[in-house]
Amino acid sequence: GPPEPRVGHAPERSEALFARARAVTPGGVNSPVRAFRSVGGSPRFIERASGAYLTDADGNDLIDYIGSWGPMILGHNHPDVRAAITDALAGGTSFGAPGWREVDLAELIVRVTGVGKVRFVNSGTEATMSALRLARGFTGRDYIVKFRGNYHGHADGLLVEAGSGLITNADGLGASAPSSAGVPQAYAQLTLVSEYNDADALDELMRERGHEIAAIIFEPVIGNAGVIVPTPAFLAALHRAREGGTLLIADEVMTGFRLARNGATERLGLHPDLICWGKIIGGGLPVGAYGGRADVMDFVSPQGPVYQAGTLSGNPLAMAAGLATLRALDADPDVYTRLDAYTSRLADGLRAAADATGVPVTVQHIGSMLTVFFLDAATLPHGEVRSYADAANADTAAFARWFQALLARGVYWAPSQFESIFVSAAHGDAELERTLEAARAAFAEVKA
Ligand code: PLP
Image (cartoon, rainbow, N blue to C red; front, side, top):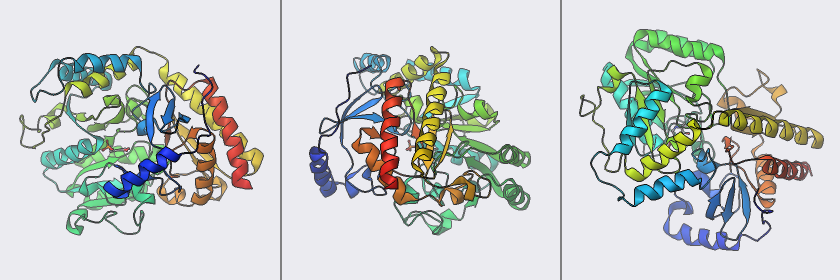
């Protein structure tokens, strides 16, 4: 492993950078959760990253559990990915015309996921936004269904009862729909919201309004309210909902190529009509994609009447990074077994540490996604967190103290109670030991 990580430098450069950033950028960041609003303090500015570690502007080496919010499943600065980007770079950065890498990456995704066709965009937001337009164009219906606490990016119609940064930064989830200013009520009304893991509510909604509903979009495992796994009954209701012609859109932006090679679709046995991807398929560069049934995808322009385009879509650098990442995953048959094993050991160690200090927590994990909810599951209706309403009982002040105590010890956890953390293939025994040692001390601080 790497030499002993350096920690304990005061975050002076980070603070100075944050002060400059706040003067020229709203809140000092280019994406809200990075600002540490819900845990307090100044965000660390990151200078570079390698393997399982980030190095901040003051020279602290931090064990990274964010992985750029999911993409860095191989760890940072992976040699194959770097080589592929460098190779592409030598040939120019963007052509505005098709190239071979787009074909290679599309073929790989089609082969691994079994979708008929795929279209590349530049972010997860673009993927979900485009998939919904496609579903509306294909079905000729206007309404969509999403679930409370699910986050699908920041397109207007999806900022309704949304998870992720919407929970901790704005007025909060459930306060009102829409969950962002600037989203017209008239447009938000086309988004019907149902409760995650409530099969009866979904059945009833579909009975009443199914004929008007173009698509149901869902996180097949919620990451954006903390990790919440779907019940078999809920998954069955989602699939029943297709019977009247409503399209089922699995938002695998977070779970795709993470929970298994074919994401949650493989791991949970889903049969979606369309799938959205992002994060891992770009290997750390800006890429999203949507794909699915060929008859539906052929409605996309220029083949069909649903318009969707992008100046930088499919650009060679992004495609190279995605290709190298997916090929490295493909070439490593037990990478998912190792990721899961690390995450299970992390979960066990965190539970033991919390128990030993008497801090009530509920650790939920699947694959390499994990959340430590600061709540006692015994107080919840099902003895586990199954919805945003359950997660909302968490003690966010205790979480914030725990987060800061970890960070001071060189462990960079997600700076919000309502997020998943992400383990990478570069996390090994040394990182696990250091993390659990820091966690024990952090739980003790929370208790004190
Ligand atoms: N969908 C899900 C499930 C996500 O987790 C995210 C981002 O976190 C998005 C969509 C939006 O992706 P992006 O941030 O690339 O626009």
